[in-house]
Image (tube, rainbow, N blue to C red):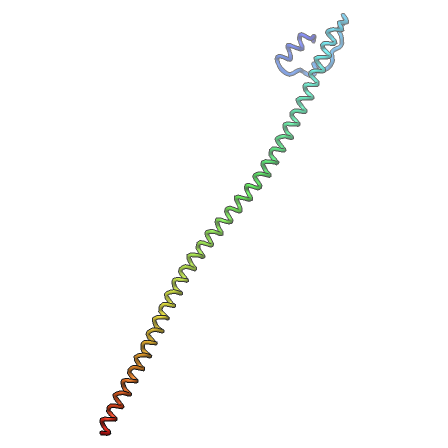
Length: 148
């Protein structure tokens, strides 16, 4: 395969394994063609090595990017879990507040009832004292009338 055949094969697609082998100069001994062919094969090998290095670098970059995304997502996920936990705690606290408000209202009602009962007892006691005084007054008046 001469240089022209190799370059046209290159335009059509990847080189076959036989193209990667350096060609021996033909019997005419054309040093220029063999030098060009050597430059071409060296360039091709260098291109392949660069492609391999580039692919490795791409894979490494993807791996690093995945690690970074996982790390960032881990923090986001932790924040999300914390947010959900806080929301649940808020709901629990809101329910406790409602329960305590009802209990406080019940206590206020009970203390109001107790205060009313105490006032009534005080009023009854006062009424009893008044009745006792009135009874004593009447008894004294009847006693005075009966003595006379």
